[in-house]
Image (cartoon, rainbow, N blue to C red; front, top):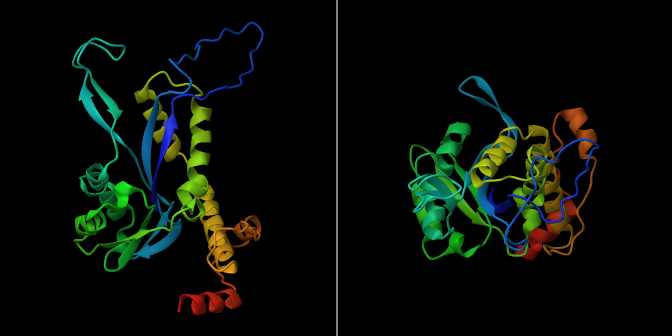
Length: 269
């Protein structure tokens, strides 16, 4: 699953504890609290799993990649970044072309999928995205499929229904959890470069168990959607994921209520 989210260098109304005789080294300052500097990242997650591939067991942790939506430019004048000509990262508008490049350029989404999930070769695999305009503009999906097809890999791009953030694991819990981890590393970053380093560090250290739990919640939501005939007015289900994790090693439950299944099949027909 893929999705984007903004990461802010600092937060408004941060509460800190001041300890006696300890100096505050950093005084957070912004030009305006409504325009705090931020960076967008594209997160790509798969389901954690153990796979036997070419006689070897691969313990995939679910983390495929985290890609900053930025571009490198040279400064035009002396600034806090350094002298004129210093190379810095600036935010890039995510249009259809840039979104395509995130997937298809060297080191992009497709390269990371092929490197981390080589067992997908030979069969079509699914990439779920939301319906944002850059993701679904005329010809975008076809170009994405063509850019990732080759060497045995065949992506299938699936666009999730509108108004359904709980059906994407990034929106469901990953982004919120990752942002908490980033704030634990540094509550106030002084530069975009520092923020990018902290976000990537938090991503690399993000535990497999949490991703497994988020995927378990996603499957719970799918069952809840089926129980209300495909509507989005459902309540998120809880079905003993922690206990299942202790007993089986994974919190994910793939069972489906047959009554709900049969009813939904009849509705689709």
